[in-house]
Length: 348
Ligand SMILES: [Zn+2]
Ligand SMILES: [Zn+2]
Image (tube, rainbow, N blue to C red; front, side):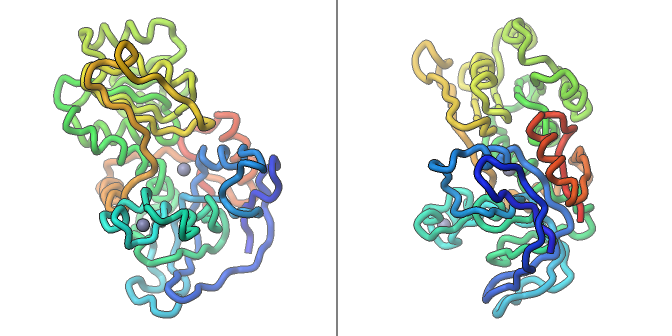
């Protein structure tokens, strides 16, 4: 079967021919129908060899997978062959205190048990077939378009998770700021608009992304590099600043802008990974009183069901650029350059 692999440190992804896997006991084999590209893939391919923590190369990429159940491993009875499913990517052990709550993205034993997410250590969805370790990591998508469904598993689930816990702060008359109007951000804007009455101000370094932000429902879209951005947000909010700030980029430059936009008691969620390692000062004179600052990683298992429900009801307009598997390396280049419009998805 064809697969897109990261094979040599510092190299580019390659389309290769590898053996089709077969499911072991408890596992499920999917015939992949669509697989999204994510900025985290670029991050993974930028980690120096001596710091690489995701096992050995080659790595089959892809952690936004959707497919049709092709074959069941021994003992699997809870899904059926032919079912269309999305893959919940942040695999955990399933039995620790976090996993018991559906918080497998924060599994307490994943490192100890050597459990890795598909495309981030385990073979991912950027291949004609993929192994899913357990049927509980599958969510039925019915007749949703696979290209639309694939980004739901990360590009929608991640902002959904970040936004959901801030909803009590986002009543009428409040403001939410979204930094980065790309794959995650354009969905984050829509999720804010569907779930809350908050006013959304979208920021991006790229003028062309502001259009997508507007189409996604942003009330205001501004260049984050505009030196007046803090003053504009202050004026728009009557000096209150934002009750929720969601940084989907996570670069030092975006964090430095974002942290100035948080109001008293506001939430500042660092969602984007950037190139890793970006930080901000927290404390008296550095952050507003009672502001909360935190990172989030991916989302909870039940939240993927919720995101898929939103999409089935037509409440999320996922902006995708479709590629063939042969063109996946080109798509990764475009992702790296930042010239994609919305989310790139390889369609099989
Ligand atoms: Zn991702
Ligand atoms: Zn666990």
